[in-house]
Length: 466
Image 1: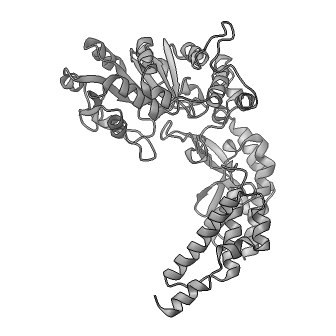
Image 2: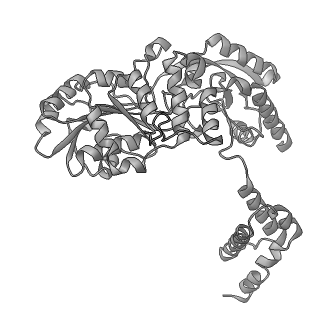
Image 3: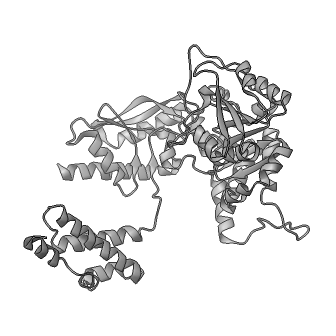
């Protein structure tokens, strides 16, 4: 080590010097001493790495500033931060997917605040089953003999496969051996379940005979996967779920269907394409169907298995079921969500269905009001909302958006988007041709005032940088 470099290291403040700094003490007052000590060590280590890289060493004031900034970041109370979704993407995976209804929020708060009868039978006083009430509602809604809830749909699928096909083969159409989001692939699920994937057919055409020819004494199940996040069009062919179910019964094999999006209503009444439902699957003879609770169902994140009682009972007895089970908050939120379906009030209560069914005239009225607040740079433009969240791929809904022209802004729309993310209430919007679009469909009704304040704040930040 050169003498100059050695001197630079020696000039760095010690941990003790930083911890005794009055400004650092003020910021670390509410933090654990051990945590503050560890953050101070990491701050100095970062400064050492700066020197080692050949860059100019940070001065004391900068090191102090970095430490205080990191302490403040750790103390941040609200996480994940609340944001306004103005993108027009209704089920936005990066923004927490489906917001919960007010009733579901109350239900979650209630189980958090008090003890509750999660696993006690209030009639007998004995131990109860945490799934009974939810299972009863789901069975009524989708026509299943039995249902089970786990922490997400990928877990539901893995559990179904592990219960039937550990060490065995699972037959799937090559066109359905897909990636279902976040780099998560069906072959990977099969591998973790202990099953061996047997692909049949081709990418675009698979026949029932392809499935039958692959069946042997080591076949554990047949798996079919709904294309919930993309479409295959053109020269295609695939057997119906009725035909696949019939084949499963012929060879006494369970047929598992991964529906993904979890829609249990007729989507055509909203002008959308027909989305297969668990009811459709079970009516066709599918043994068990797996779907999500936080997509088109409009509830909390969870995975749902519905179907044959004997099959679900076998899954319940599997060791992984306890590892993947959901907690009281999820069950409370899901229960309230399902009650909206029971009471036929989804358009009035479940946020995503309120958004999907929102009249265009209401959207235009809000967009016009927003535009009036910002003068000549703001107009109302035709736009399209999308479902998102790996549901109803390619489906759009006509909408109207506030459009702010960013062409004359230094830094353009990208800098404006950054300002919006840094506002006191962050806004996530959509950029199109140097215009920032704000779609009222996905902005909750109570957020209008806050949205306008954050846009104004972002515009002022722009002006300061000019």
